[in-house]
Length: 124
Image 1 (cartoon, rainbow, N blue to C red):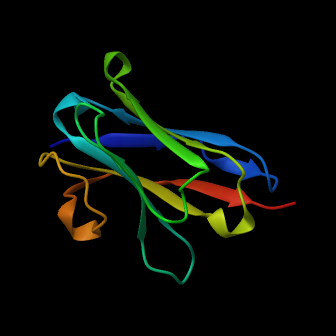
Image 2 (image 1 turned 90 degrees about the vertical axis):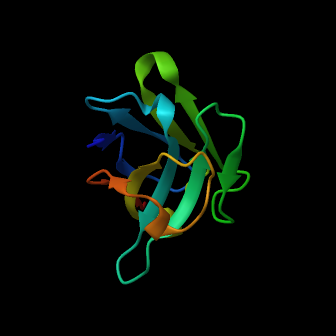
């Protein structure tokens, strides 16, 4: 079963940046579409961004457009989420999720493989 591990979360001031990483532990991520979701306390999990296997198609949720950039490094078996201009409302647990179907969709239920999440806190 595909396992992914997120890292890179932490505490950052408003306007700051973080880069999250999602690494495949035993299997190559190159055969999967990869997505980032986030969940704030008391809210539903929402799609942030997604990238297809070849990296040719990328999806961004409204909250991420213009501020976040998703990318993948096949050699390192890792997908990244560069987050710039962070706001307090970006505070959430960020999850990496994957699916074999090479189509990016914003639905939680379409991703069978999930990491444990990494906490991002934006606060002064």
